[in-house]
Amino acid sequence: MSRDQPRRPREADQGLVATDVRDMISRGHLEQRVPDANLAQRILDEARNDLAGAERLVDDFPAQALQLGYGGARKAATAILEHQGLRVMSGEGAHAHVGDAIRAQLGSALGRRFQGLRQIRNDTEYPKPDRDIGDERDARAAIALANDLLTAAPQLMEQMGVFR
Image 1 (cartoon, rainbow, N blue to C red):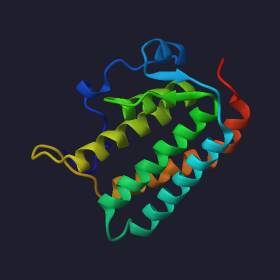
Image 2: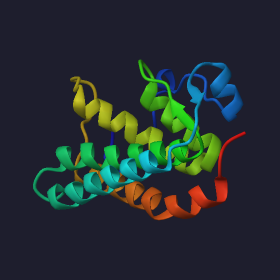
Image 3: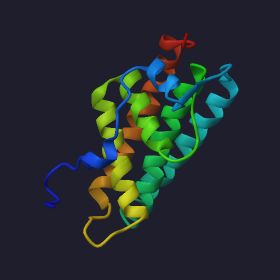
């Protein structure tokens, strides 16, 4: 794969993308719960720490920066969901479900960015001979996504309120 081409999640990994939060709840991908603003804030703080670590490591250790940048983006999304009283169910596919929730709640562009980085992060964490692993460009994309979600989170949390 040319490193000049944007990477997209493989077809087999996309699965059925839930376009509606209620659909995700009925499928068991999300659960409704009592929102916990303090927990949401703690998760945002962890996301900020991950982002700061990624920014420090990106030049010398891009694979580690990718992991941290992706983690920051995932945690920022998780905090937004928590604030709404939604939680991604743990288990196989949980990270993909975070991406589906982003797509359902915040739009397809953010969802595609998240899912693409999720796949790159997975390929980096579990390398295979026929797949590229993340590089500095991918790490910077993860940092940018985490930064975008963290910047938008306070306003999104205020606007979205509790999911009903």
